[in-house]
Amino acid sequence: MYIKLIFFSVVLVFSFLIVNTINDFNIDNLETKKSIINDKKRIPSNSNIMWDIPKNWREIPGNDFSLAVYKIMDIKSNSEVSITQFPGKAGGIGNNVNRWRRQIGLAELNENEILEDAVVDYNELGKYTIHKIINIKKPELAFIGMILFLDDNALFVKLKTTITDLPIIEPVFYKFCKSLRI
Image (tube, rainbow, N blue to C red; front, side, top):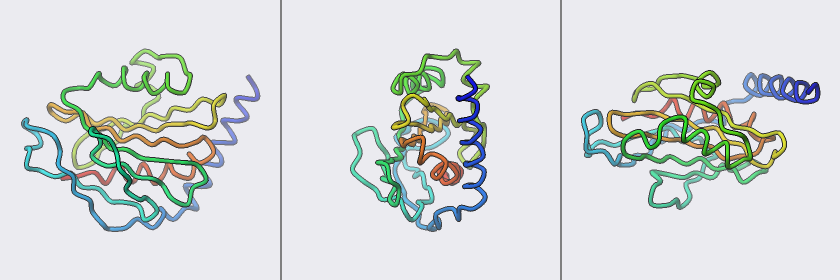
């Protein structure tokens, strides 16, 4: 128990130091436009979603569900960020966060526990939640997921990395989520 507390304290201090010394990986003003699959009220089907791409992110092929997938360069691990959109609530916050938790061997939480741990923020598209999911027993895989509900769609941004690289990438991920707009 004390080892876990010490580990999380070290990670927290390290994260603070990284956030205060990192130079946001020199975010480019380059904008990427991707069509949003949405035929409902808030975002018409002819609208585009845009975001600012960090200089060390390179677009790679995704799957049919991806608006975009980026590989993060200059990082030891095979870290990727994917942007996806699904109709409706796509299972909601609880189901999606618990699916991510199961992927790294963690037990499910109820929705209240999930929301208590979430970071809530806003961008031009609206209110979103960010969920950090780590398992110290599996340091080779960690997630940060952003969930944003539009009128009839759910937008997800998911970072897949390692516990070691998480403190380096996390502030850039937060800035990326903040940059989402139409």
